[in-house]
Image (cartoon, rainbow, N blue to C red; front, side):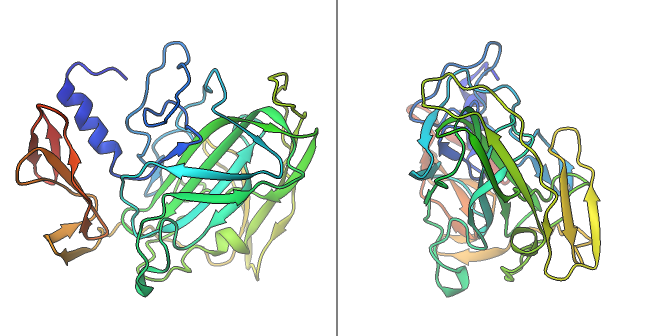
Length: 335
C-alpha cells in the first residue's frame, strides 16, 4: 500500500487506530512494531491491520490478513517459556470481549489455543465493577510439550463485546524451540466471520454471551511439529484435526463448511444465536461531552485528534509537525 500524500497516509493511520492490534510478536506487514523484518517482494506495510477480518457475517479479509509470511520470523519462543504478547497502545476496546492466543503448524489452516482472556479482554476487571480498559499486554506460559518448528504461526483473535458484530485476528510468524512431537488442545474459536461460522451477538452487559463457543461447545485439535533448535532448519508439516467435540448439553451437531479463506471447523452447538445484532455502540456523556464509540474529533487547537472508546475520549494523538486536524463528520484527517 503506497501513499501519494502525507494527508492520505495519516488518514489511513487514523483509521487503523480505531480498533486493537498486537505489536509483539509483530503481525504480518505491521508498521507499528519495534522491529519489522523486510517485507516479502511486492508487498507493503498495512496501516489497516486493526480493522476486523469479519463483520456482521461478512468475510472482509483472509484469516491472517495476508497469506505470505514474513521472510524472517519475528520472534523465537521455547516450549515451556513464559511469554508476553503486547498490543498497540491506542485503539477502541469495544468494552472488552473474548480473546484467544493460538498457534498453527500448517500455515494457518489449523490453530490450537494456548491461552484465553474471556469476557473482559483489555479490562482490569468487569466494567460494571469499575474495571478500566488499560490492559495492553498479556503474559502466559507456553505448554512444555509444545512441538518445535521454524514455521509456526501465532495468532491473537478477538470477538468484541459492543458495537458491530466483528471478528479480529492478527498473525505473526515465529519459531518454537522444542522437540518434534504433537500437541492437542482446543481449536481456536472463529465467529462473526461469514455464514459458515457462529454469530455472537452484542453482549449488552451480559458477558456470558457467546462463552459456550469457548468453554463447552468446542472442538479438540492435534497439531504436529518437526522440532527446532532455533537454527532455522525446520520444515512445515501438516496438523491433524481431531474429531473430539465437547458440549454441555447439545441439541444439535452442526458441521460448518467455512469459506475458502478460513480453516475447516466442526462445532457442536446448543441453541446458537439465529440473528446478528448490529446496534450502534452506546452514546454516553463524559467530561468532554457526548461521545459515540468509534467516532473521532479534532482537539480545539487542531494539532491533535481523539478517538471515542466506550463513551470516553482517548488522550490526544498528535497529527505531526506542521499538520492540522480537519473534522469531517464523525471522522477526521490530518493535512
